[in-house]
Length: 358
Image (tube, rainbow, N blue to C red; front, side, top):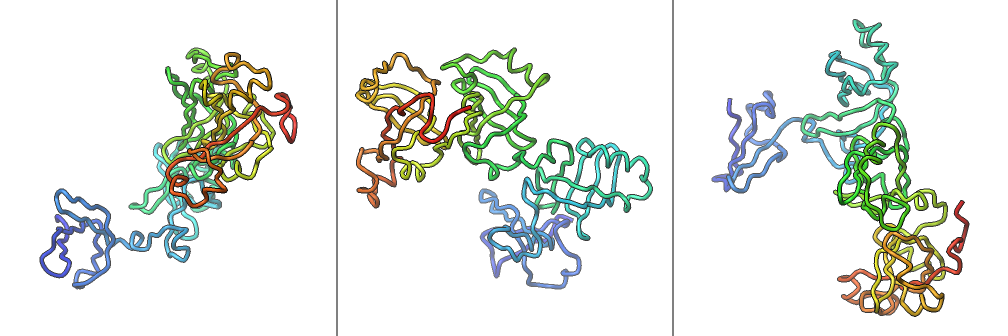
């Protein structure tokens, strides 16, 4: 009842156990078999294995495209699903191409399917869920968590980090939390974004008014634009000028190297008397406008503050030691320290180098 004890050719350094639920009865007479590790506990020297067929066949889609069993990734849209089991207060198990693919909670059913379940509850085989989206996966159980509500079926709604990139505009987001640090936005069922104070208002630096933004969760939704995307953190902006900006954006260092002479909209993040005005773009790209460049345009640093938006022209791309990247292509310094952009004010602060902001 406690499972099967397995050894790896003699006295093992680790004790390997297969739970009864992960053991195939027909293999009881086999002394050698294949298994997949599900848990490795180095402190207790314990390894847990599984022999379930779907877990033995489970592979990464990109690495093993020919794998027999592949779970759909988060954000995948599935169509023409049949209901094989339904519990009114719980949800429905769905099948596609003779294989159970996932579970759809009752709260996430679309109105059309709910009506069909009321009429044909004794004949589930005739009920087809036209479309559902994967919002989570359970690899050990070999099924996906699905959703068929209106938000999930918006194809432009991101559900995975891999669907986001700097500069993407996400519409109809909901405020979930407000604090001294800023605002947290709900992009979808599976994604959240952080808005710092500098990006909450169109003003240079604004304190968050909880009453204003908490009311947005009940009365209206907000649009945001993605600034940076990391595996565990997504940042965005609510500045209307950035959200509605139709000009080309600067979102990578590779693009920065090839954009000398072009202008982009950037955010003022600070000022240093020697280094100059610090400007940040999308994707963590940043640079500085030296004081002499500001003086040449009769711009006083005290007139600008963190949160102000400026059009900046790229002069050149430098590494941390202020050597040209073209001259330091293979130097260790380039690999250890991030580069920086040398900038100047754009010819006109009302127009970019390519197109106008409506």
